[in-house]
Length: 281
Ligand SMILES: NC(=O)c1ccc[n+]([C@@H]2O[C@H](COP(=O)([O-])OP(=O)(O)OC[C@H]3O[C@@H](n4cnc5c(N)ncnc54)[C@H](OP(=O)(O)O)[C@@H]3O)[C@@H](O)[C@H]2O)c1
Image (cartoon, rainbow, N blue to C red; front, side, top):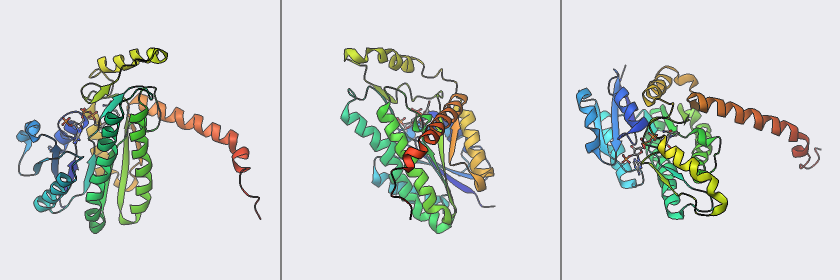
C-alpha cells in the first residue's frame, strides 16, 4: 500500500511534537512536520529515512502555507491527512481582554486553520480521499470564565468543521475535531497570554488565571497517548471516524454533562420553541 502523507502544523512542542514523533516511527507514513522555526525540529532527525519533510510554516502567512503544501506534493505526491494543531490561548475577562491580542489569536486558531484547510482541499478532492484533524478543545463545547475569546476561536472551529464535513462527505474526506481537556504541553504556559483582572468586580478570577499558568505541565493529559489515539483513529477507523473526539477524562465528562443538560433544557422548551412557527397548513 502507498504511504500516507501526514501534514502537521505547530510541531515544535506539545501535541504537535508528540504526534510528529509518533508518526516519524510508523511504517507507511510520510511526515511533513511544520513549525515557525524548523531548528526546533531536530528531535526528528534520528527517525529520518527520507520520509520526513521539515517545513517552515507560520499559519498566519498564506504564502508560507502555499509553499509548504507545494513542497509536500513535490516530495511525496499526495497529502492525505492534515492536522491543524497550531494554536494559542488567552486568559482574561471578556471586558478587559486586549483586542489586538485576541484578534491575533483568532488569526492563528481560526484563520490559520481556515487557510491551511483551503490550501489542501483541492488536492484531497482530486484524490477523492483525505482526513482533516482539527484541534478544538473541550473549550469548544463548554465555557469557563476568563477564556471567552479562546472559546470563541474553538466554537468557531467546531461550527466550521461540522459544516465542512457535510460539504465534502461525498468526496470521501473526513473531518475529526479533537477536544482535549488539560494536557501537558506549553499551552497554559508560554502559549497563553494572561490579563490578570484589574477591575475590582473581577478579582475573584485572578486566582483561576494564575492557577492555570502554574499548573502548566502538571495537567492530567498525556500528549503522547493523544498522538497514538489520533493516528489509530485516522488509520484504522477512517470509515467511522468520530466528528468529535473528547480527549481526557475531564473532557469526556464535561462533554457528556454539557450535552445532557442542554438536551434536557431543549426538551423542556420544545413546545415553547415550536410555538414561534407559523401554524402548519
Ligand atoms: N494543552 C492543552 O491542555 C490543550 C487543551 C485543549 C486544546 N489544546 C489545543 O491544542 C493545540 C496545540 O497546543 P498545545 O497544547 O500542544 O500547546 P503548545 O505546546 O504551546 O503548542 C502550540 C504550538 O502551536 C504553534 N504555533 C503558535 N502560533 C503559531 C503560528 N502562528 N504558526 C504556526 N505555529 C504556531 C507553536 O509554535 P511555536 O513554538 O513557534 O510557538 C507550538 O508548536 C492548540 O490548538 C490548543 O488550543 C490544548
